Structure formats: structure tokens, C-alpha cells
Length: 341
Image (cartoon, rainbow, N blue to C red; front, side, top):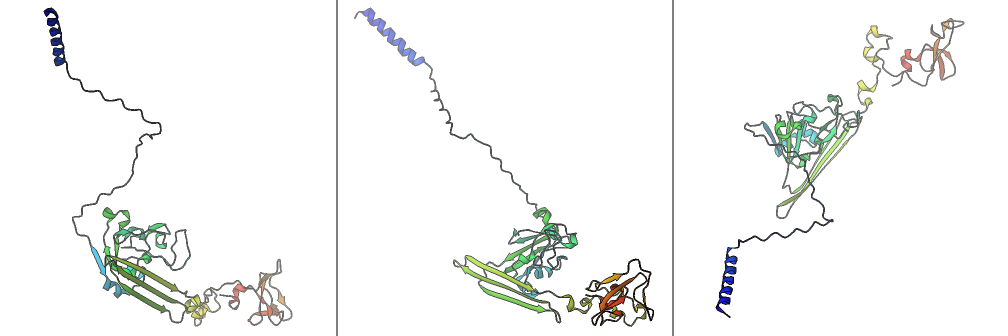
């Protein structure tokens, strides 16, 4: 190789080395993303709707009454209704014991409620161990039979209650609109181990009304006292009081109360008995007025031609039909002896 060729090759190698040193560095491009599969579901937006009520900062003391177990036993209450009615702040609950519904939400005889400060049964919140009880749709006569959501106080396990906490002031800002009148919180026993049975029997002397009520509680601790099982049972049986049990309801005939008052002699206003009976009211249509019997000129009908049938045992017979039935003058409504209860 000649010197000229060597010089040319050296110059070429030097140029290549300089080119390799002066070339700028480039980052590697990202690999292309594979297209999404047709089976892959597209992303969807999920919206969760909820309500959050911020707690109100309470800076003042609220009036709370606490009734402990000893005080509950002192009331002798066996039902939630008895217990709630022993609270001084409890208002009237106008439920009645008859099953005579005025609306589809009318209360039965075994349902009662809580009405703090007489603000209505739908305005008192009832809690069980700090949690809301199941509300009970009902209506009461004092509210014009308007359906409201209240709480059945007879669902409270009286024998299993450790204490009763009554917030005697409105707490709608804390608990909501159903706590306008206040809050009643029942705290149940958490460590009762054993059995308890309470019985009560009563009757109204001289009447058919009798009542039997019993409550039972069974509890057992397990897992070394870390758990407890309790069962509460309540039973009530009440018989009806009949109208015939009381003298002032046994009859609608109050004439005996005015027996010594001559002004009421023959006045049937105080006789409220029914005028319907098997005896017939009759009349002579288009008659000549009072029909009289001859001889004797005895009136057989009224001036309007009315007459009736009655028992021969009652006074006022004008004409005897047979030994049991006779005709009398006028209508049955004017005869006190012909009315029925």
C-alpha cells in the first residue's frame, strides 16, 4: 500500500470517529398501544346519591331525665304503655281499646304511642339503644284521624330495660323533624343472666271486665361474659265490659230517674229505647178520623186512624184478638211498655 492510500484511509477513519462523537442522542419512541378488544366494556360513570346531616355543635346543657331500673320496678309497669304514661312529660294518647278502624291506619287495641308535651305522637323520637325504632303508621282521634308515623310503645321490652333516658326539649336540630317534642331512649340490659316472670290480674267488681297480663325475661351470658342472649315475652288478655254491667248503661229508659217528678208523668223524652219490635203499626187510610167502638164509644184508633198490635199482657188493649194479642190505640212509639232495648 502506498503512502497516499494510507493517508486517505486514515483521513476517512478520523472523519467517521468525529461523526460518531458529534451525533446527538435521541430517546427511544414509545411502542404503539394495541387496540382495545371489542369484548372490553367501556368505562361508565357511577353516581352515588346520599344524605349527610352535619352534627350541630351543642354548647349548652340539654334537660335529660333518667329513670333507672329501680324506678321502673317502682311503677309496676308491665307494658310499654304503662311505663310511658308514668312519665310526667307524657301527654295524652287518644287511642282507644276498641278495634273500630276509621281509616286504614287506625290503631288496634294493642298499639299505643308516645306523646311528649302534647305535641302529637308523630313528633317524639323513640330510640332503642341509641338507634331509631321501627316507625308505626297510625292515626288518633285527637289529631282528626290524620295518618301519622309514630312508635308503638307496647313494643318496648319493659322487663329488659336497664334505664330510660328522656330528652325533655326539642331536638330537631340534632335528630331531625320527628324529634320536635323530644327524644326517648331505652337502654336494654346487656348482662342479664337468669329468668324473671311478672304477672298481674285485675277485674272490675260486678262486671264482666277482667284483665290478665304477664311478662317474662330470660337471659344468659356466654363466651366468658363477652356475649349475652336475652328473650322478652309479653302477653295480655282483656275481656269486654258489657253495657248491662252498669245501671246507667244497662238501659236507655231513664224514666225511673223522674218517677217522683209530676212534670215528667207520661213524658217519654227520657225513654231512649228503640221503637222497633215485632208488633205492627197500622193505620186506616182515608178514614173518617177516630174510629170508635159501639157500644161504649171506645176509641179504637187515633184521630189520624193509627192503631197497633201488642201483647195482651200490656195495658192499653182496645180490642182483644186472642189470649196473647190485642189491638191498641195509636202507634207503638207512644207506648213505653212496647219499646225494647
